Image 1 (cartoon, helix red, strand yellow):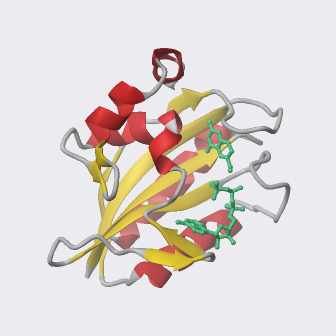
Image 2 (tube, rainbow, N blue to C red):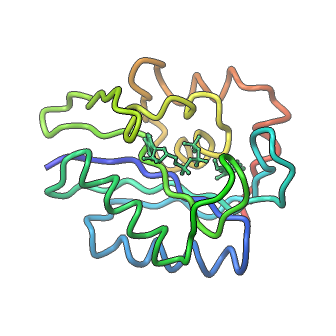
Length: 163
Ligand SMILES: Nc1ncnc2c1ncn2[C@@H]1O[C@H](COP(=O)(O)OP(=O)(O)OP(=O)(O)O)[C@@H](O)[C@H]1O
Ligand SMILES: Nc1nc2c(c(=O)[nH]1)N=C(CO)CN2
């Protein structure tokens, strides 16, 4: 058993329907809690439409690779194809953290599955929904999510708004 924090986002097609479908599918995979949907400006160097994002916490009999497999299944179900790095997509599911049963954070330096996700600490679109879902959340190696949000540029935080 392990607990995973997943970040879900999309900026093509019917974004809300895609995210709701993905979150509904997660109920069959040990969903503990899901944030609401957030409207977020595109992060990164690629010019693209705004995203809808959400964060989900799940506990199930999966290891880290199993969580990545679930993330890829969800992306494929949403019709995602491989495209430009950091570019537009119907659904992107990232594994943010995995925590073992005894509370130990799982770390991985495999490029196919980096854990904790190496860019989570700088992404308001991950941290703001995660904090709303779990005010006590911690990003291993970085500290309490509340502190990470407080350290982000206030404009980045204010731009992540409930949809
Ligand atoms: N923690 C992780 N969660 C999801 N994918 C990961 C993770 N660590 C590494 N990857 C790998 O990242 C690769 C690129 O994934 P993807 O196309 O979703 O990147 P991206 O969403 O554009 O960028 P980012 O990873 O910064 O969100 C995939 O092959 C995947 O195996
Ligand atoms: N706001 C926001 N920006 C992004 C997102 C995302 O989910 N939300 N995903 C990306 C894929 O790498 C790139 N940029």
